Image (cartoon, rainbow, N blue to C red):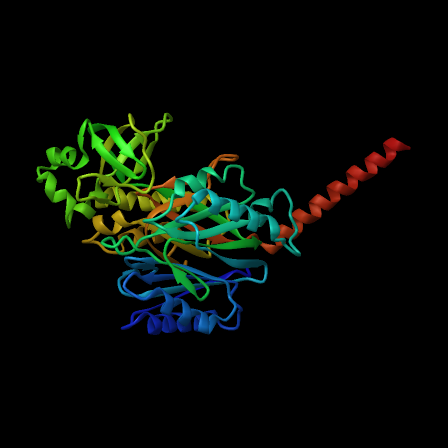
Length: 427
């Protein structure tokens, strides 16, 4: 196996020092290998520009992307006020970083740029066969602003895209609605950062959620853009007030205006599954601020979760990721959990990581953070899926060299036999 992955993590007074220490740890672990890609998860309390500059000062031209999170997730669990840096190294893959600052203005235009980027890159020296097509498919790993921008619009514009796409929406300061994204030395909000990855890299993706309907059902009777104004003909906060016995006015202020994330809405998709949509916050006027539009007339169930159901969902997500690797051993895992996971597991911080390790193994390096949604590949020919309230496990592995060589040899022999038969038929 040539793919190597390591994670470094550090806490410090400022982002620059934490970034330097975390990167130094990762470089020390990786040894003589040249990093092919770096992933940063930084506390939302640090200055993202300082973090990006400090990491890049040690990594040089290594493609690097990252995002802000309420806490970082690693193999040791959940850590607040820290910077975590993951390094992936393999001579069989190549990656490039991309900074798309216009994401908040247009998800559709961002999707168009991603298509163009995938079209102009070329893979050199990669043998593609039927069995290795999955490993050699172009992949886009991205992080985008979780408060600003329309991820669903971007996903809908990526139908039949010639690449697999997975990523998360950064969490940040809920009071200001600010999140940060990093690409190389660049950092800012309202943007999307992406790593385009090519070569011998297999990715197994699994997602699940720990929230279930409790019987209460609403009809969304008035919505506009990202705001749900009324449920069952009355202000959204009043509908929740009647259920939870807190005054409607209290839902517009801390802590309830952010704890509303724990009580998302589930919309029937017609196949027995629920499309989960979670409020970012309750506005002072009692409306729910979402990050995906929900049209008027939609019926939705109230969902609630528990630590037990979320831990079970974490295990199911890891199992799905492992199955998607199709027998390949995971060498690294990226974990993107909804910010509600941190809220509901407050008494058991890091429990989702322990659940994932029970499936993937304790020796698999992990990096991750809390998000305001994730994007995962959809069914063949369909747009990517935009998820709320889920936990997504992205497991990285690679095809064995012997298997690739064997598959290539068989393919060449098959082509040779077919060519000879064709020649005989001509004679």
